[in-house]
Length: 608
Image (cartoon, rainbow, N blue to C red; front, side, top):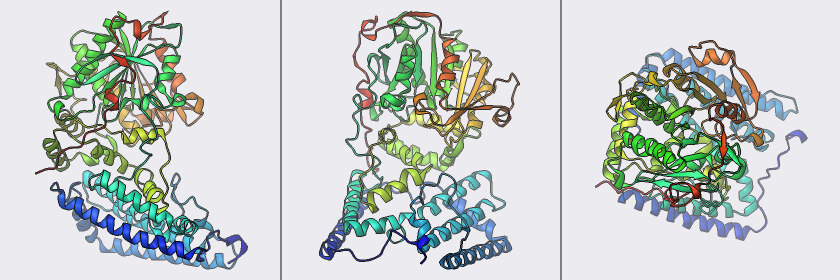
């Protein structure tokens, strides 16, 4: 091996062989404990779905279509073998101290092969390239299969990618050079610790394995995160309403009401001080209110989508008027909170009310025809499975939702923690965003079924009169207030092409803005971070699609928050004396962030 190919990995037995042997014995015992725990948890579970994700029929259909064109399969196999030979030839050239260009490399953003060992060590370089070539070949063959309906195609594409990601050499002991190196350095202690982590996670998940993303005691809600000062000024069975303490002497006359998603907790908008959207808004001179949704259990079994409108947004508007005396407000709706907000605005328009005079939508969909990767989980069979689970427990467990979202980014949100926690034997890093991601919320069954069936399956919200709420047919074209629509360029949950459609369905003046990154980081991007970028289009053209809009848009570096602030400030009225929530007409119930947000998601009962 030449000097340029020398590796820091050296497979020599370390000193302290007895310690290594002792750890191997511990590993053997821990492995037995793990197997016993797994069988115990599985034998006690009666809630077993043979094909819970309904992928069997889609892959059977795929196999039938692929076998109908054997020549295509043969050509693909020939190309794959040719690729293997090219890699082998490159390895031979590299061994002879000649420069060689890799046959294939990781895609942009793929963090799995960052270690120098994957390039310096010929063996691991070969393993990496053959894996990447094989994975690409498999995924390409599936993607190129002809004759599949669109639903089946999306499903097999997604789950084939899940399969190839799971087989990455980074996920296995013998084919991950970093794991081998750490095992030699720690004399096997990393594997002992990793098995302990695995056993703990299996026990805490009642047999369902979910790698821990952050240490349990990494953060305290109300102290380290969700710590912006304020008061709970109103509450009911479904939500608490937080009013934040002003930091400026003067504030805009119109309060700002934020409706977050109830799929997760509100403090995604109020993490640490340095990335808190809520704290930043308060500092800009807004009187900020936010809804903190209850974490549902069987007591909320009758709560519907309409309940979230009447006991959520409408109740919040009443409370804001009572405590501040202001009838008119501006508003924000984030994700499903924005979907609810759009329906509520239509309802109020039908009632002749314009209590919300300008509205912002963060990553919110109102037309679900092209609703992203979550469409994969909303076919009839899967919705029926979800409904069976909700009927048994009285709610949908938050961990089920978390698993779904984690699968959308499995390398980052599943396999990276398998490697770190189990193979490397390390503790996860204390990251506020991941702490929030793990702090799950449950779903009431009536509400969740309504949402899945009427939005994702039937796409009725965008159809005038397709839904009825509060006795009023919902027609988004009746919404004629100014709207600001934010979307993120790499959002797989709410694709920006889908979010853009709100500007065509509502009748008022609409401004669309596209941020960099994805569903969360595209929204939570404090100006001080100097990260990402955003696109603005000042043209007055009537663009039909987001693609057309993007062609004429201008890119700007950094956060989009200041641009949005310029838009909202002009619609928030004159400045008035700041409002102290402790001195409002509604007597404060408790300090922010309140008690609802601190409730941990309850686990459901086992199906009998």
